[in-house]
Image 1 (tube, one colour):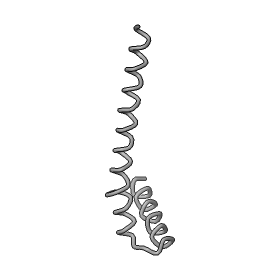
Image 2 (cartoon, one colour; image 1 turned 45 degrees about the horizontal axis):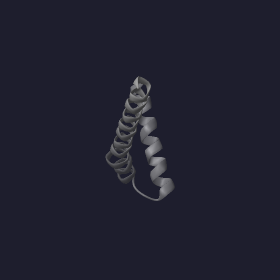
Image 3 (cartoon, rainbow, N blue to C red; image 1 turned 90 degrees about the vertical axis):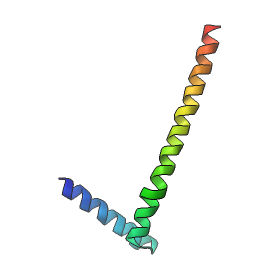
Image 4 (cartoon, rainbow, N blue to C red; image 1 turned 60 degrees about the vertical axis):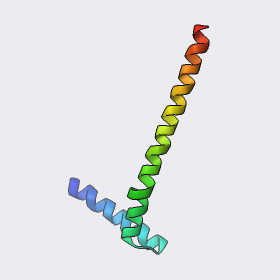
Length: 63
């Protein structure tokens, strides 16, 4: 099952490379070296923003 998922992902990356006229390696780098870390940083920012908003609402509720 793991092999199937892995090769499916490889096929998707190869298809993306062909569709965009780039290489498999470039698509891989764009997704996993650039895209994923940016995604994680954005999610951490959202978590921090929600934390601040919750704290503000709790302070208003206590007063």
